[in-house]
View (cartoon, rainbow, N blue to C red):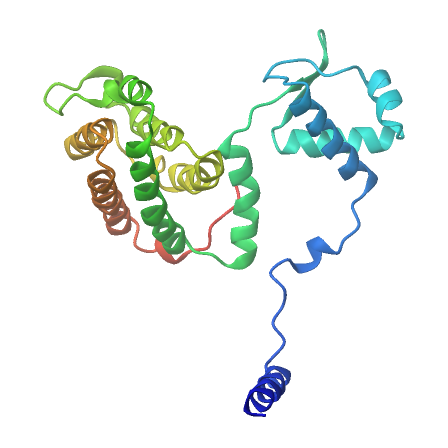
Amino acid sequence: MAHNGTARQRRKEAETLPEIPSRWGEASRRTLKTSEIVALEIVRDIVSQKLKAGDRLPLEAEMLKHYRVSRSSLREALRLLEVQGLIAIRPGPGAGTVVGKVLPGNLARTLMLYLHMAGATYDELLDAWILSEPMMAELAAKNPDRKRVREALSPFLEASDACHGPMRQVAAGLAFHDVVADLAGNRVLTLLLNVVGFIVAEHVLTTTKRDELEDRIVDDHKALAEAIIAGKPQAARKLMEEHVRHVVEDFKALWPRRVGEKVQWR
């Protein structure tokens, strides 16, 4: 009897709880348009046929016959994929449709719209970056392919007093974080977390005026490269968090007003 009374009480309490919207929202209940279904089928064919970036897709006439849809639905499907960067449509001589690349930047531009609509600020974006980068550094240090890890990070093993030329450029600093993300070894995490890093790079790191990487950043990258190559995940995580926090603090000091602004779409 006590058990049944407890169950009835729980049901009664549940009935008084405010309605909480499903995390799936309307997307799970919306019927897909024909163009969206075709876009999905095109992607499935790209994957099943093991096509690579730059490989040509069939001509429009062939795709119309294969997917059995109207020209307008097919073209809308191709536009959907083009916006996502998953295909590229080349006009003029040698025109055609080719397979694109799975790049964080393409997904990031869609996420920026969602972040702006949600009212997310640059402060929240930077907090997410502080959490995500150390995770990737830790995973990179755990990567079992030690030869690959060493080869990928060897260019970043020079200290600031010996680092000159291209390795001093801001692009090299961004490349370091890309390499660490790639070495994380989990394609889901790499893509999702790299999206955060891409938005930070485009909206924060490349907007500050600097001719080259500062000594501290070069030395941070060197220490991180050594920890990851040595297979020390906790040390790599700690060093990355300290490194990213330093970069964030510099940005906040430089542009204090920007921190509270909403993430913009670019």
